[in-house]
Image 1 (spheres, rainbow, N blue to C red):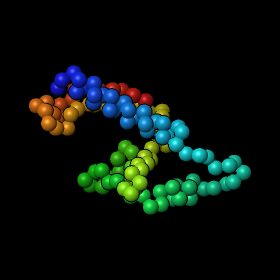
Image 2 (cartoon, rainbow, N blue to C red):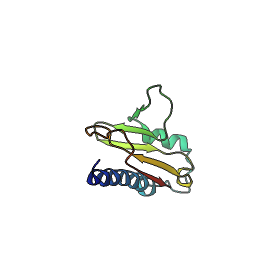
Image 3 (cartoon, one colour):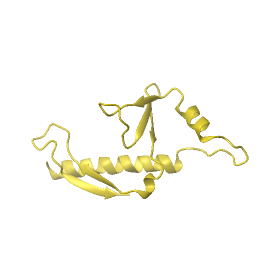
Image 4 (cartoon, rainbow, N blue to C red):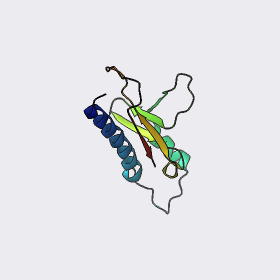
Length: 111
């Protein structure tokens, strides 16, 4: 795999992780403190009309749960409760179209 291809792949992964972080940090307005709403009702209201993405062949839960709205082009990610405290290992590879497709071409250990 060429060096440019590796840098491009790494940039895409970093951009994706940064966009998820920004979505979590700045994504939603918080309810006023004087109103007591249950988190379940808030989640149901936000996810209404969205389609859950099943990304595993056997239907088991994955690391993140994604919900999409194909009409608007929106994607929401449901993150684990303490995701910001865990470390994640990301192995970079090219899916196809090259001789070395499928082989690890870089890695990241991130929070």
